[in-house]
Amino acid sequence: MRGWVWVWVLFLPVLAQSFEVAQGEARYRVREQLVQVGITDAVGTTKAVRGQVTLQGSRASGEFVVDLRELRSDQSRRDNYLRQNTLQTDRFPTATFRPKEVRGLPSPLPQSGRFPVQVVGDLTLREVTEEVVWEGEAEFKGGEVQVLLKTEFPFEKFRLVQPRVAVVLSVENRIRLEVELTLRRR
Image 1 (cartoon, rainbow, N blue to C red):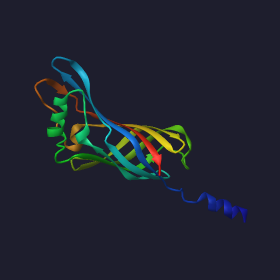
Image 2 (image 1 turned 120 degrees about the horizontal axis):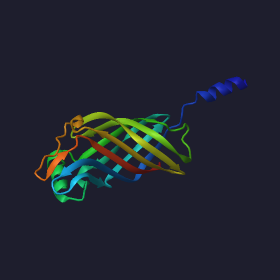
Image 3 (image 1 turned 135 degrees about the vertical axis):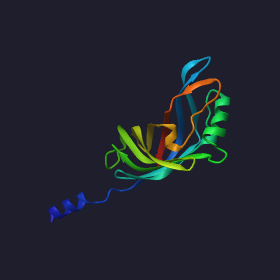
Image 4 (image 1 turned 180 degrees about the horizontal axis):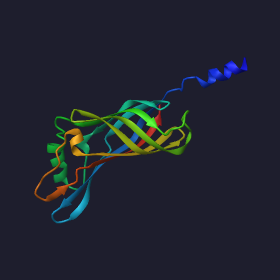
């Protein structure tokens, strides 16, 4: 009888655990060359991040939404150009990420510890949805998880047009996205 119990325990389904965003910040980074400044990174940030995720083993479901209208950099002219031209936030105000898989986490999920992770899912920008892989780490601290993730892709992956204005000599064809999230168990 003990052998059957052991086999049954091995095949128990992994219990799902749900988390929601308690705090978050999303950033973009794009390398640009400006006439008077030289080569620098344009960085825009927003704390307008909301969402939730349910994890069951390596499977993930849920949705994270970033309000692109709230992105701010160190130059309001850049911000206005991105909102009006590149992102067209009047028509497409948000970016949405739907996770499908999280690689690198132990099962069952721990109460503490730091783990390198990959998060695979579908990112939607301006009604274009493509699969992306985020790389980073997750640190468990009791009922919270601190997550830092990064991904990158060329502008054309989401049919975005690289900015072209007089004071900008060039813009690298690579957008780097970063998110820092504090997730709380639900």
